[in-house]
Image (cartoon, rainbow, N blue to C red; front, top):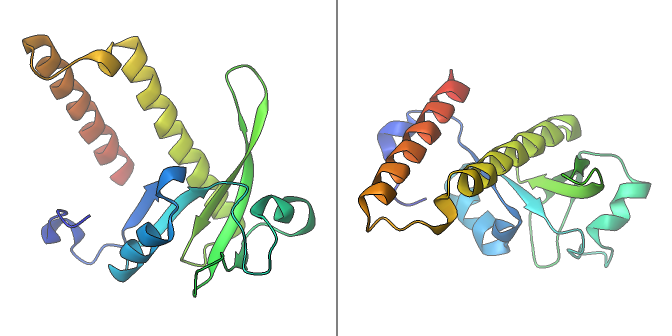
Amino acid sequence: MATVPKSLLNGRVVLMQADIEFGTLQFLDAVRKRSWRPVVGLRSNRTLKDGRCLKDLYRHDKRGLQVYLKGMDYPLTVSWFWLKQADGKRELRFVASTYPYSGAYLVQLGRKRWAIEGFFKTAKHRFGLHCFGQGTTLGVYRWLILSLIAYLLAHWIDQ
């Protein structure tokens, strides 16, 4: 985050989408200090200040609820959705932001993030990018193509 050029920001609202591994208090604090808006996945067993788990919200509360995680002094807006797996089963996913987005919009952002994740997993395994090194000519070409595709996708979404 510290290496993002200021010229890219130019008064834009920065949405930082991240995976479950980045749903830590330290990460959320760092993104929030930059006045960016994190949208992160959260594990269903994360504990709230009142002792409940996130999964308890699914059946009893509405999407877009503002909650406080244990050890956090600012609210998170939380929503959830069912993600369809490759084997046809569904998995409950939680998505949260420090910005008070609506529950429906958070679900939309969460689904987009998982679509991007799915694309990169497919790209890695279909094109052998999961086992290449940049020490070979072929590896460098693969890396350049993947970087170009990532740039084009990001530019397309920005437009």
